[in-house]
Image (tube, rainbow, N blue to C red; front, side, top):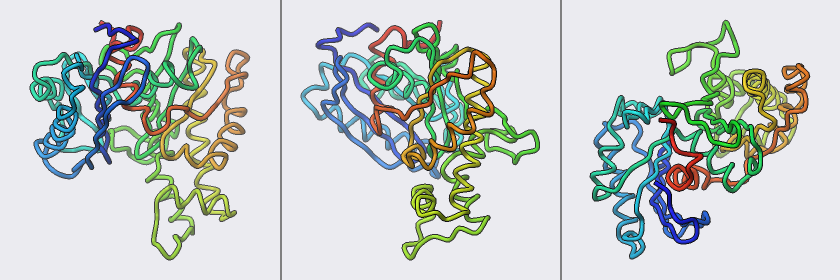
Length: 318
């Protein structure tokens, strides 16, 4: 669906393991109405869907709802855009779940476009953020999991199922731990927030009086010089650098944009990431790769889901 960039309005859903966010987004990328619910990730599939329907009901209560001609979804993956199904690793109640059909029904028959959350973030960054103007880019979400998406030849490239660029499940440790995806030694197993924090705890880091054991707390400890916290971020950075370098060798990207909660650590992550990239990206055509923070922030998923509907270069390959 092509939407008038000046006046078009679409509904957007950003579905992850922690929250389900929704918004009405206009053609200039402005969020006009928003809603959010926690994801009941450990409940059954219908309970999760009820939370999605509650977010859509909030949007439908707005007078602007009637102007929204379609729905875009960026979902934790893997997704299968060709079948309209999702099987998020961190939402076990959804396996081959017919999300597109269910959202279409809840949205009164509006057309629905589905992409993975990494592709959604990529579409947002290419439309409005740090990848804007770049013809070849990798965008990463480093949070509860690690996702990603690609821009190739000036277009977002979701691939046939909407999962292309999913760097989180690129193996970088041949003898590494088993990953929830079924693989072993994946980037996500080394660099996601929960695994980064677990590594810090295993190596001697201890939380403060509040008991916070999140990656945010580890980042604060790393900034204060705690050696186990610093080492945990350096290890995560090496894993990310190896995945980014492998991607650059395959498809010749010139920029890697890193967002998500773990990226909020700032130079605690980016300094060792850039150092490690210098080691892994050694070929002449990968050596000048730039790594920058994402610019669209916590709204990247919503803006990217909207872009999947509005922008032809974000539409799934047919």
